[in-house]
Image 1 (tube, rainbow, N blue to C red):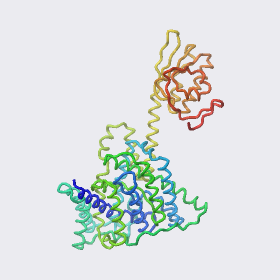
Image 2 (image 1 turned 90 degrees about the vertical axis):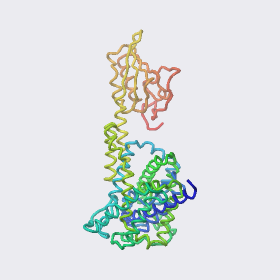
Image 3 (image 1 turned 30 degrees about the vertical axis):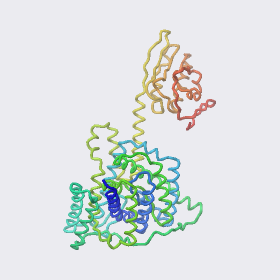
Image 4 (image 1 turned 30 degrees about the horizontal axis):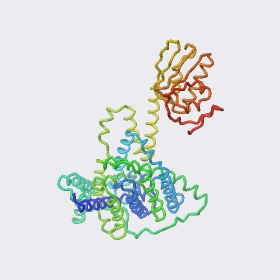
Amino acid sequence: MSNAHHLRTEILSGLTVALALVPEAVAFAFVAGVHPLVGLYAAFIVGLITALIGGRPGMISGATGALAVVMVALVADHGVEYLFATVVLMGILQISAGVLRLGKFIRLVPHSVMLGFVNGLAIVIFLAQLTQFQVPGTAEVSGHGMSGGEWLSGWPLIVMLALVALTMAIIWGLPKLTNVIPAPLAGIGITAGLVIAFGIDVPRVGDMASIEGGLPMFHIPMVPLTFETFQIILPYALILAAIGLIESLLTLNLVGEIVHERGGASQECVAQGIANTVTGFFGGMGGCAMIGQSMINVKSGGRTRLSGVAAALFLLAFIVVAAPLIEQIPLAALVGVMFMVVIGTFAWKSLTIMRKVPMTDAIVIVLVTVVTVATDLATAVVVGVIVSALVFAWESASHIHAKTYKTPEGAKVYQIQGPLFFGSAHAFAELFDPSGDPGRVVVDFAESKVADQSALTAIDALAGKYEKAGKKLELRHLSHDCHELLSKAGQLIVDADDDPDYAIAANYSVRTGVLHAGH
């Protein structure tokens, strides 16, 4: 494929994304209770900076609904200037997260959570499009879609559905004929051409709000530089930074699976932070990665930073010089594009594999999907990770057991198998019979691992029981730090050349027997 063809594909992908960004940015500005240009400026600045220095070429960032629903209370109570200050602080927090390399913790998100996440996202994108099937001016946009308003009916509804179907058919069928132009762009162009040429009366972008404006100007947030202001904006900044990074890093992984690339988490955190810090000083509402728009870009052929940069520059051009033309695009065409994104985003395979995977994984997939639709994407991911961690701890706790045998000398040996940690400490204690065991007992940890402070406490408690019964206890194949951290049982460890070497996530005071977090 020639360089000219690559260049054309990247630029046209960027144009497609920019066209789809307009109604999204306007809608999310309404959600946050700010002027549409505040959302459009955020989409331009965040999109441009993350396209240039983000962790994954091809990703698209901008104003998002998940952030907007958090911002609305701040704007209502304190005004838009406090929002700008919050976005600046949000960006600083995200830069700090990137510098500290906290992005690597996205690896803790299980695959079942990812499936539930993309399914919930697809449903949220679908519900958000239903707003366009209401009479312009009567619908109130919410974080996930429509709220109130009168539905289209009769002939207007039929025309709207027909145009949506036409756009979807073009997007589905065009790639079978040619890849010269991205299918979503062709769908928007052909549908818009028909509507404008025949003067078809359907809702258009301009019916939402005017997008005409000038270049974003540098603007220091007009808030008092006091500790009280900091107390107001810090909680919002923390929440926004966390939601923005979770969504951005999940998008990073999702796009990475499509384009077969890995890494870039810390770089993405820093890029999002710089983008939001700059946005706050240029009158934007902040943003994060947009999975729907990223999918449009990738499916349209956008693979390099050029497509993201082109999308941002096209968006700015729409605002400054081409607003009257863009405002004539029928919303039905953009709805058709987003419906195809929904079809492509939803993990249809999850409907079949849920019957094959463990029941707990199936429950997590459904739970994350439901929580995503009911609340927001970040909350759903946190809930999914917590539930998955609890399930893992429960299942691991049931895996600890012991093989026993007696030596020729009459000693009883317990060969512990499975991890010893807070979840299995109780089951570990029940493996032994201090009153019925012989005078010498050996506990072998060669096939186990002492993982935390609860495990250390359980070993010490066991030593106390055998000491009270007047019997000799030996502990073998424990790591050297176990020897140092155990109080009562430390002197019972029998050193060997093949002792394991691992760190325990605890700081156990030998003098007081008190456990402290950290190691």
